[in-house]
Image (cartoon, rainbow, N blue to C red; front, side):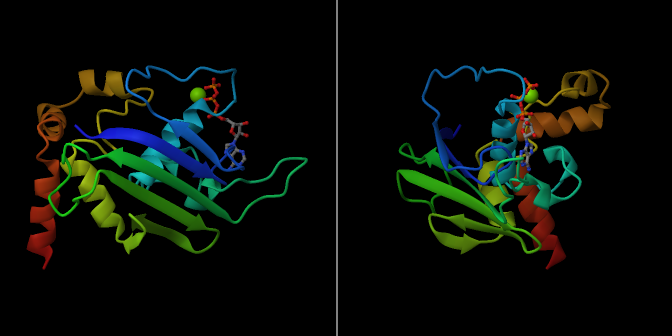
Length: 183
Ligand code: ATP
Ligand code: MG
């Protein structure tokens, strides 16, 4: 399992000013008053891992993740989220031969998203695959949103199998096979 060590946000939802959250071993929760941005943090994680559904981000369109302004501050046109992964035990695929991997996603109003891995521009697909191989990801069962426990209980066997495959770390292989078949 890959360890997340740092989450950086800027212009993302309520996190208008650059903010950095250290995710240290043993961290078990984020607490704070209603509306302070706890769910926004989890959504930032989901988003940087390649979430493509605006609805999953509680928005109507993806641009809604950009700080929309308040009575005292103007809206922004760019949102950025960076996630640093600890790869010191080389859990990522062998092409990543460094201790830290930083995945970055940036969105510009009206212009869509751009991804970078260690500063180098990359496809959304590569980011999604990196996380799928690490048995995590925007839709992974490691991130349980409201209502998903009930959905799991009521799931058909075939859908439950997808969860087991993801836990076993083989969902990335399926995506690659699918890509290969499309070529
Ligand atoms: P709760 O305890 O009620 O679950 P929470 O800590 O999870 O609250 P969030 O849902 O993360 O709170 O944050 C909600 C806040 O984020 C609201 O004040 C909302 O206005 C603000 N917010 C969401 N999207 C944006 C945006 N695009 N621009 C500015 N503010 C935003
Ligand atoms: Mg919340």
